[in-house]
Length: 314
Picture (tube, rainbow, N blue to C red):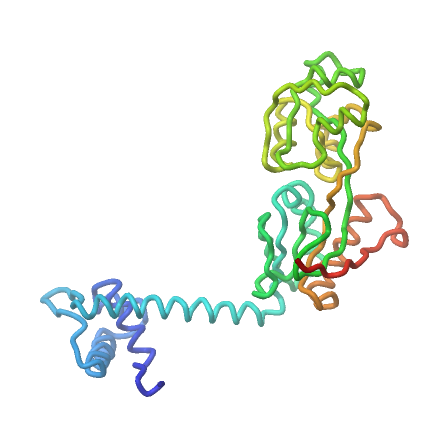
């Protein structure tokens, strides 16, 4: 098969000249002489047995065959380049790719990530923010952090943190509503909802043995968005304890009734490819996030450790 393939350098010369419709510009791009580009393309045309360009006085144009061949060459060179880059990336022991859910990344992980980089300056850390399912078989992502029930197909998972929810709002909104001294006062507030959250306002009112007001309020697809709405004074939100911690400390939010809390069914999990628990990159993240969780939770080192969960399959 290889005997039928044109030399790679002739294909690169052809692609550049066809894309720019200029032998001169192609030569500049590839750091060759005009004559070298012309010879390589002539060699390619001789090999194929057809002209690929119409050579005009001051420019070139692709022939009909050249246009068709250009599409094929462009596609194959692009695929080859992407595959080569993927192989380089997989062999790069210094590149660490962490995939993280949107809300957890913006409210908890990102403000702490600089300590991972400072502690491991040899690592080239990349954070990919997405809530999409992770396919570790591609080798693109080293570890992932997800908010879920702890069951992940074809991946090993360790619970990092659980959380609870309780009512929070901005200082401005609390003052606007007269101080909100009694838990019953929540019923007359604008309620902010996180769409898809299992622990809803209706469940919270039921747990507090209060009638659910049933009033409408804005809904947001991500916890970080609902929290930001509360910071802007839009109403009261059931703040997820992990996500609102920094905003409470900074005074952007206030906790109305800290004791009126509900545990959340889901939690934050560290995911990695099954069998990779002791891989150097995974170990770095496991140890680092273990320390961060201890700092965040105010726990002594010996009181906290990540516990590995068994792999689950659909």
